[in-house]
Length: 250
Ligand code: IP8
Image 1 (cartoon, rainbow, N blue to C red):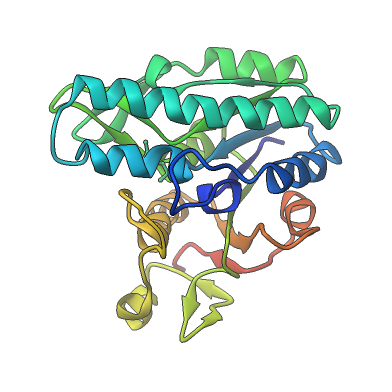
Image 2: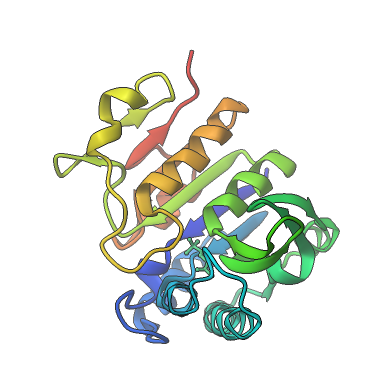
């Protein structure tokens, strides 16, 4: 039973300051994950390690060789902090950098070499992926969000649990989390759903929700929950519904 957990970059980093991580939060999350590490793929957001350089080099609009190098190296550094923290918590993981194993076309994943990820899972190792830059057949390069990775991986690996941890309690409407949302009732709430409080080049909550609705269309439901609250990660990994459930339309 494969489970996919995404931890938002806003939990792992200070989103307003470049290269500023939150080591206590990274360590807490690593300890929570260490309580149930089996068959788990971890994806983390880029936080200030990715969104600030990506904005500085205008990577959403422009091709910049230097910007690609700086942004990738920066998110790879955050990934290293996560992998190290997992090791400290007693669970083995390895970084899988999307830049090196997938190909985009117009910003969408077209090819993805999944064999190393499957082999890691078989051998009791947590693959750790992250929002990254990647080469793009139409544009030279583009940004691939952790949320797009979640959707792709959940489909390819037929995940049974898909949990997306954010720094808020779910999909908020008037400050409160919706218990569930589907493509059918999206128009009711669409205008009330915001982007992100910090610097974000991949669309914040709206971008996340659209990815997960695509996944629900394929029959795989997910939850968006608050990973900043201790204990929630373990609950989400158990398949409990907390936060907002992204349901398939009936
Ligand atoms: O934080 C964005 O990934 P996300 C990746 O998962 C970059 O949206 C490089 C900004």
